Length: 445
Ligand code: 5AD
Ligand code: SF4
Image 1 (cartoon, helix red, strand yellow):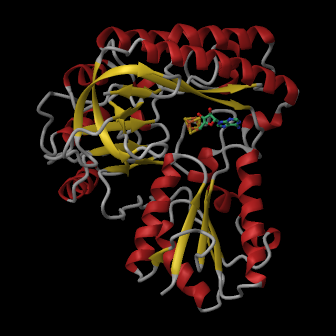
Image 2: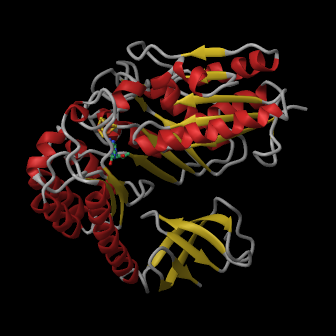
């Protein structure tokens, strides 16, 4: 019995691709290992979005390959964005590496493992301009699943390596997405999260719907809201999430769907990156501070209980104290429920990597700390405001810290710890009143 483990860095897209690779290995007769240490096959799925993410993965791969001295039959492979970016050179950097599989070719992982077990190495990188296959296999047994609907990205933000490692933007045909969600629902999945780097572009660059697809009952003309509506109509699906958003996709149809479709979760991840127009323009984000805040205002007017989360980069080339303070004030104006704050990291081949990385690391760290501190206070305040409200919670199972309690998530994606009602099963929806709030967690009785 050959066992495997996949160690995943990076975004949900990677989590999804690791899952598809795992399912393919299961189908090939391998077994998931109880722990990574004991696994005969270890695969590292990598991220390139910041230099640190790559350093971590390289360190991890070095350690894993070192274990092959004592365990010569062990297989160590790498997949994902860093594999796509560094390709063949990885075999020089990581001695004894068995395979490197790039993005958009997760179906090559199982054959690469088989080749490695037979003593052969594999290098498979994807053609970033060809029509890609989306990851399709799912591990059995879950009540929540990721479904990739859009691959690649064509936005070309100045700092971002994604277009160079994940390739051209391409939308999966709606009928393929809907068939996948239907099969998941039949297998017991209650919640789906649709994935795409710039997901609101769904169906805009490559067509998603065919002329003979059924018309939208709600009259949605734009492909993304139309797809969300069709996913919501699938029996068994109780909740729909999606990520990531961009203000250009916040149109009247999407807002109408948020207002009228109860299955669409009241949460939007809308990366802002900066609150300064000068920085946003250099980032090539395609919106201004006012445009972003206007999208937020339109959403909030229609959906007052919408939870909003974001990504922010501090220390982008040329970011002054004034620019930084504009980001700080925007975060308060937008009232983010949560924010992921990153120190700028120049990525080879991107536009901004040709500019001087002129904000010193200590200054990036200071700005990062200030925004984190603000966000902690804001998050705690917004959580406190939920005390006394009734929330619909998707029950996940016993809480990690206290097994007599369960945890789950609200529609707004907040973690709730609660006393499990009799007979509750993972994947059930329960309605509970929030009794107490901590900065990162809500508690219900
Ligand atoms: N440096 C720092 N953060 C980055 N991100 C993307 N590229 C970089 C970079 N070069 C952040 C953005 C993005 C998130 C996934 O990672 O905030 O939304
Ligand atoms: Fe990167 Fe911009 Fe695409 Fe997001 S939209 S993945 S930040 S290029």
